[in-house]
Length: 269
Image 1 (tube, helix red, strand yellow):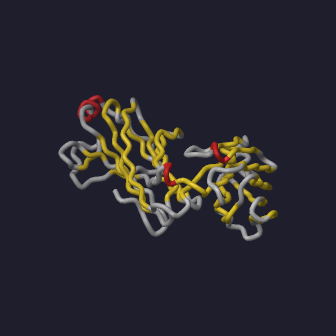
Image 2 (image 1 turned 60 degrees about the vertical axis):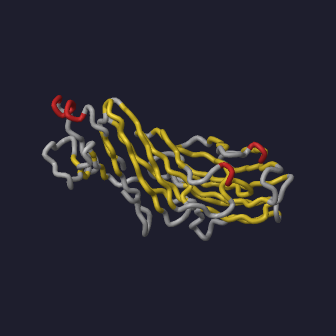
Image 3 (image 1 turned 180 degrees about the vertical axis):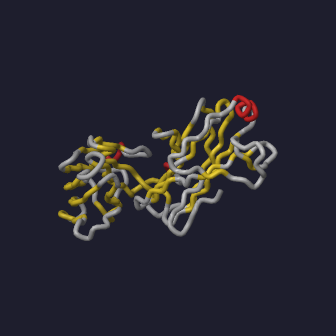
């Protein structure tokens, strides 16, 4: 979901506070399908011995889209102090340790979602990680793995295997987002949030425009009162802006407030 706006030459500001039920891994702001801003609640200095191996995606859209992952990983020049499965909800599909401290194997299914393994290493930067699966394989030196993800493309629909670092201990469950953009024509802006264990949430379809006096109104109703808000219905096509309407809003900053609900908690607007 998201909200369709016509800011034109007027700067648009999107703000949100996300409060999760688990540590928040990241928030992405999308313009249509394109990620234009990513926010993480931790710094590069917080990263260390914890490494995540994550696989995701599907074969194609529709029925029969599932991808069966049968994989194994081997760590050389280092040891795995402990490991934990990520988003393994089927008790019949497990992560097993085949060689204590150095090798694991798994059987997993994704249908557009994600699953993975978190590794806590004896040494953060020493050694190499080799990953073999029936979908994609790769090898990387841990010294190369810093703040960015290393991604192995696996074809299909958003299918890939990625390796990246996370803070060793749980981190913040609260993230504040502030996004500003000037965009000609219409724009569909949608913030999305992902928690540490793979739970995704998209914004609710709520938008409110504010003028400089602080009152709340909508560009489609000049007589709206200060308490009004505009709720977009799914697949509703917004009406074209009239010349008078465009002139009325040409010099006014626009603020859109969106909510991203997590179970038991929500975004403050």
